[in-house]
Length: 198
Image 1 (cartoon, rainbow, N blue to C red):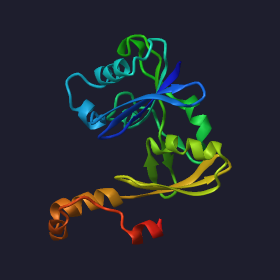
Image 2: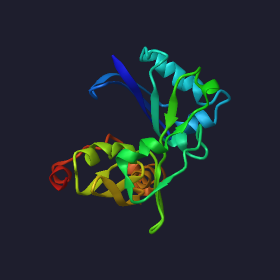
Image 3: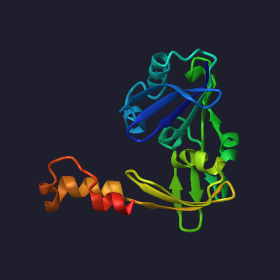
Image 4: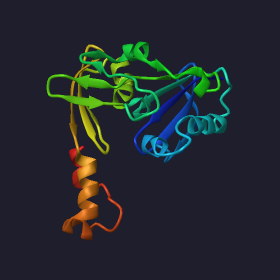
């Protein structure tokens, strides 16, 4: 039986999982209907969420917890940033509830992102991905590759600091708009040197 629906709503993608009380994934739904797609459409965010909930056969009383860009200023409902150091497990208490008239009465909440004052930086969605590490007691550095790669320092169940590197975005720009990109015609394959480095 589904305990809740977890959603990672990024800039360019939507991912939802039906989660059992013990934490097991029961079903998954994905699409390219990210925040940029929804913010630029006439219908907005609610119909996208409803379609995915129908695909997951989520009962009407199943709560939904959303992380990522749906909580950005240009997203569905702004969920203001929490500041560091941030105990990852406490972020749920700062979630913003989407008005019931937009969710057909369903309990839908959007988690905040994190803002760092010193070495100014922000993250939305990655902080939720770090929850598993925090609950497992991880101390040290965590890397989250992506369009904007995040490196986060974990200490005592909290994110102590983080830094963003635009590695994925730079790769995409170079591949599409630079001379070096003309030679990049096939898929990117992780070679032995890369795998040894990881």
